[in-house]
Length: 194
Figure 1 (tube, rainbow, N blue to C red):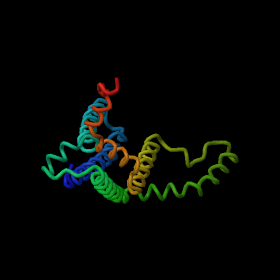
Figure 2: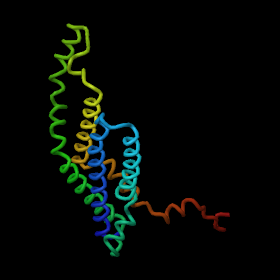
Figure 3: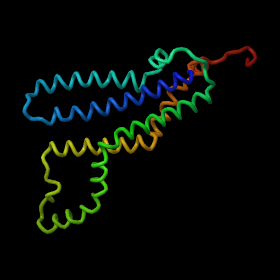
Figure 4: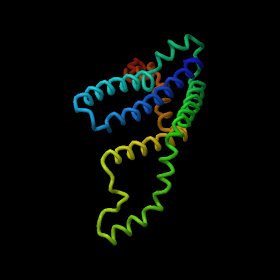
């Protein structure tokens, strides 16, 4: 891959992750509304699942051909330079995606940091009144919202940290050389070994 193709691959990956997170957290309000019947929710979920799978497949996991089409031809880089460019561009892009998601996640991160201060009153209330603390008595919609916000905040922190496991996976996926795989699968039967 050329430099521009690698940068395009990183941009497509970042846009795919940002679109996926935005879609996932925008659709939750549709499911939380109890005014609609079940059939529209099922149809919406099916269409949403197909759209999400399409976005994830073509922008995050299998974006090499799309990146080549967008960026055009270029000079092939050696594997070391390709790994360096891919790592740098993906890390920069993923940190940028995390920073774009950060404003929505700040209230959740602040609530997570307040949890140690809420544990003692909750435990005291449990032992004094022998019942579930009032902090935990929430409707299912509120628990769903809390869990979604928690996962979004954790994803935001992971992206700001540079998403090292995802970058490692992308490097293995992108730098895989099909000619080396073919050589390992077909044994070399030369007459000198006999």
